[in-house]
Structures are given as C-alpha cells and as structure tokens.
Length: 249
Image 1 (cartoon, rainbow, N blue to C red):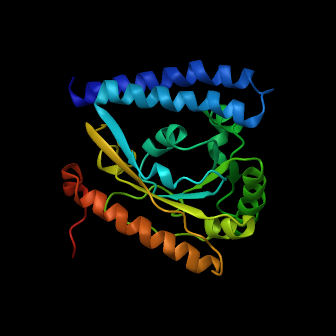
Image 2 (cartoon, rainbow, N blue to C red):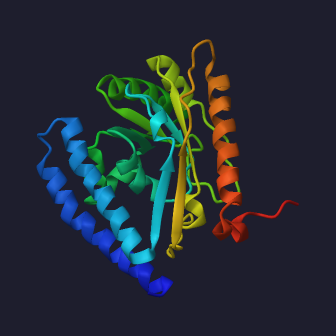
C-alpha cells in the first residue's frame, strides 16, 4: 500500500476507534482508576496493532527491567503522537501531565479525563508546578506512575528543548526516582506529520535515577543528559532519520 493510502487508512481506523472506545470508557466511570485504566489502554494497544498493519510501523523496547515496581516519575522525549499511544501499552498503569485544552476535545478528551490526568494551564507556570506536585503525589500514592514530557511540547528530530523542572520537583516531593526514556519515534512519525514511515521505533528505558541528596536542577540535568545522549544515538543509527536531522552550521 502506498504511504498516503496507508496513512489515510490508519487515520480512518484511529478516528473510528475513538468513536467506539470513548463511549465504552465513559460508561465505565464507576470503575476504580486502575481497572478503568486497563480498559482505556486497550485503545492504545489497538492503534499500535493498526499502525503496524496499515503503515508497517512497529516498535521494540529495551530496558523494561528498569521499570521499578513502585510508582515513579517517568521523564520521556516527546517527538510525535506515537508515544502517547505506545506508552499506554509499554508502561504499567500511569497518568499523564498534559495541557488542559486536550480534555475539551469531544469524545477523545472526555475519555482522557476519566484516566485522571494532571491537566495544567501552561500559561500559569507557578500554579502549574503546584498542580503537578500536588496531583502527582496523589496519583503516585494511589499506585500509578506519572509520565511527563519535560520539554513541554513535541520537539522535532535532531533538536532538544529545555527541560523544565516540574518532573524532578515532583520526584523529590514524592520521594521516588525518575525513570528516563528515549526513543526515535520522530524518525517515522514526525511532528504533525500525516505520513508514517515503515520501520521499527526503538524505545530505551534507562536505569532509575534517585534524587537522594540532589536538588531538582541536578536531578533534572542528569535525566536530561541521559535522554539527550541516548536519543542522539538512536536517531543517528536510524537511516530514516538522516534527512530530518538539521545540518550542523
């Protein structure tokens, strides 16, 4: 199947899955958060299967053994929509830190709201950090991991944004480690891209980083150094990335 047709087929199935799954999830509002999450995550699993079937895009994960049994703060690179689908199936029950506007999207946003994300108003930074810490501690205490994209938005292949300190501050407040995650999803499914390239997304889960004896800036810097270095290695090793990596001036 040609790439535009494959992408159109995936998009049609993706939209249809929202129409089917969202009412099911909304009808299960009475379930406790973790059982409800297990139903919600099946949506991500379906879309990963559909993505592989239509576009030939699959994934491999290394470092699963690094995921601690106790809830922690997961800090990940953010390049595309891919990780928001795949992480539902890769990681144990978790919640996301996301911008509140996403919850206003009909059906999709309503279903997301039932996963109890930490929805923040990014224009109000001080209040947003308080929300992340307060809401994050509550979610971690309930047995769920918290996933944060510390760059705050999707960043194109070959580039790195400034890491914000909210994730590190949450980990220190909750007394848990941060778990760094790198991947090269942007090589295949770029930021705002319609076409999905066939191939295998590589996801690497690093060793947990303890915050004991560290301040938020140092803890965040250690996670950033690992994620940045590992992402660069994954991108440079992937032929599909080469034309997307900006040339060094």
